[in-house]
Length: 291
Picture 1 (cartoon, helix red, strand yellow):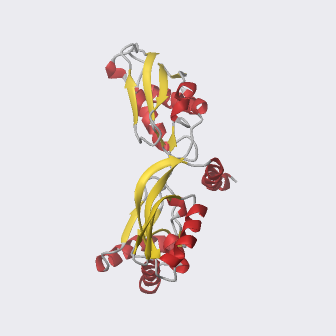
Picture 2 (cartoon, one colour; picture 1 turned 60 degrees about the vertical axis):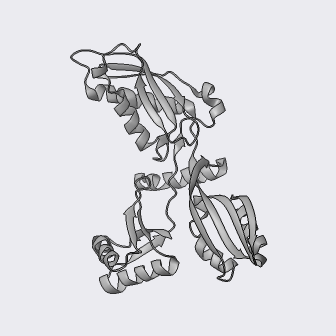
């Protein structure tokens, strides 16, 4: 089980990392790392009681107080809502910065292919040694277009442009790529993708109905059921965002007799209402800082 961990004060922040690393030397089940997509510090252990014991030891032994919360879900934004809209969202914006001009043909890969590329067409009117646009686009894709989520599943091809032997420098081409990326995103209307987990739940037969209803409420898709003696095994696909605190709830629903396993399966498009909430929550800290 994994939780996001935050120190309560600046003093606690200074103590946190050294204290956790000492605990990790004693307990090999503890994992402590930073999610590169959400920038949160995460702590993982063998279930909620284990995590709570770690927090207790941090406070009593190292005087470091922390807050636990459900981790953010690492989402992404593809370059177009659905594959069938590829032609409608393809664009050819021109972007100019300093002494560099570049024109891009923008298209997208199949949703959740997790691939992106920037290439130069042979028709582009500048030498390969001056090709710097890819850096600007790739850097912009990593930073994201909305709420800081990275953009995936796209292909950009430089099909035209101009340069100057003296005045065109790397920063000029990078800026041209960034401007083109922003214009493309405005036209493509990207959507959010979320990780979907493959889940296997095992519990006594009498709890099967309750578990099925709960999975439906979590936007889960049941893939099948099988019986093993007096035990029912449910296989389902459920968004990661709906499974962050599932262990505790499963214990409550099955009186401690249920167990589950899950692993990452694929990315899928986030429903519009859920996406609006994710974007609103992602923007809120920025707005508060500006105020």
